[in-house]
Length: 164
Image (cartoon, rainbow, N blue to C red; front, side):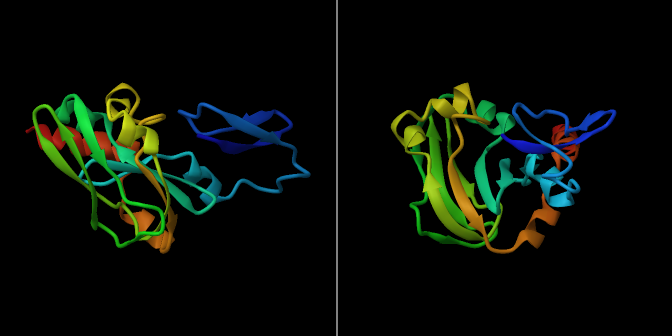
């Protein structure tokens, strides 16, 4: 994950949970826009997919909760580049030793890349669902769809409410 941080005289502001930061000066970056802040944020669906945004491209995966519920993933079928997706469209499948689950697109757009390493070694989802275990990347057609997704805190509350 990468985010641009604005450097101020008294320090800099960054979003929490950021693992890598690209530094810029005030001359290079006049202000930190809402879309830049959003880029650092992982957004979730109620079906347990997540998406992060960078340069209008969303990287999609499944949540830690979902990979734990599935168990050891042994098969992954992901959408091919060039595939047109609509919001909530079934676009892939994951199979584990104890269950099978469909993958739904959290946004509309065109698939620009799939994680072939996950197709070859589906266990990457279990070992690192947020980094090496991502599923596919999609050029986002309608950024307003992102407003309907949950942020990290809302997703945690959703999971707690679902337990009861």
